[in-house]
Image 1: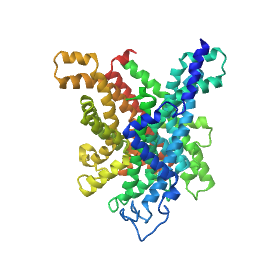
Image 2: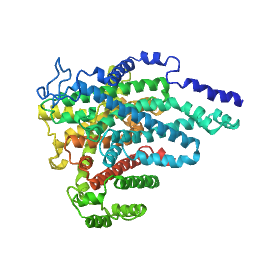
Image 3: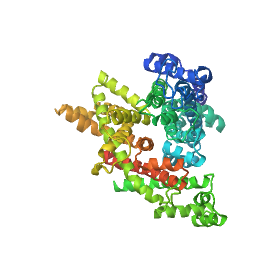
Image 4: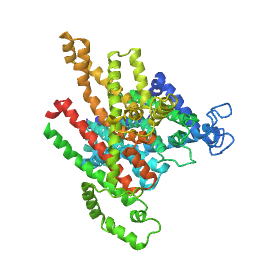
Length: 295
Length: 312
């Protein structure tokens, strides 16, 4: 019996490749909102990735003869208060904003996932890890950002640290919940009975069976992380001028809101589009991978 | 119920100590020496030494932490480097406006969110449902400052309907107009999640036996929805509002900065920008404690709304 049970736990390994499940892409494409969101997000990611080639102007080049121009044929998104091309700055700014979001999701997801899974596997650690998680949850993301900026000084790395720290406890909880479910399965017991090592049990049996839940959770969190990152940028805790970052650009434009509303509005709109697309895509991923999470 | 609340209070103590410890660490790991910052750039070595002694910086870390807790319990959070006022005084002045702003935002978001969510659930699958849900996804995806920028630009500046900078006074003393735009900005972020969860919760409850019984008794549909369905659907919604507290607090920091609202969030941001560490530490601590308190209140409300929780 144990060999069969072991197989069921083990066989899942092949399914855990994110797009490995049959027809995931096809099912995603059938959801029109998600397909459109995916398309828009891919476009934005590509533009950000190839920013130096895509941006029409140098994002740092100031031209005081073209200050605060509204959008026109020459400058599609207009120019800012020092005559810099806003489209180019938005493209470079999106790059920084996306990198911050990805660092938050990937590093935070990794640390949080390990914490949650270890808490489940090693019961002795559970109390300690979960208490730490509770304390971390007592600090809302923005507060963590403020605290980190207070310690290390404002900058992109301060925001990145804050986003990681803010992601860890939520992922740890989610991973623990998912791992608890897997721990109760027969194949875990069977694996232990036939003497599979702790490392193999944790990685092959526990982690690989939890990955899709953690992945869905992270895609759902991505939008929120981008919002938090740009809010910290807006508060001046993130990128420092002249570096372009969408939240900070919105904050800079606020001073000229009544003369040239486009300076603040355009970066804000871009954040909105990114987050909206990420949320729609996250919802679609959830429906495909983990319909139980549906609200 | 009393026992439940005491139990919940005891559980929050480790979190509170954790918060205090992290705030304490904030001053320990700051690269600059607090004594040197307080003394100023041209201070003599003796002055710095005296300040170090006064602040207890020459003692061991555990002793310093213990003393820090005692000081916090006494309400002594140090002195602001910039304004030279007691940090506790600064916090006392700013906490009121922050609470006012958060309550105002909740007063806007909760009724609208509940109404929209219920409306969407009752008309499930209709155009109304789809429009409400689309707006809710859009609302969740919008940066707080974007909503604020739009409101400032149109309602505040172009149409000159409401003030958009500062606070003219408490709500009961003619301050209401200055509260509306900040509260609307902060509240708008919460409407989406509340509407979405209310819809799910109401849909779940509408299929329950007691709703069928209520209908079978011949009660009017409005009574069934409001008294039977919505009351029971409130339980997950209240939990969500608790979870949104982090959101609310973060949003409050951004909103206060945007509207020059004299709250704790703006105090914290200003203190960090000007390297006023004692004030930053105090403000961050108060915000974290506020967050713990909101979660505690939500748990208590939860027990009140769902008597079954008591028996568990």
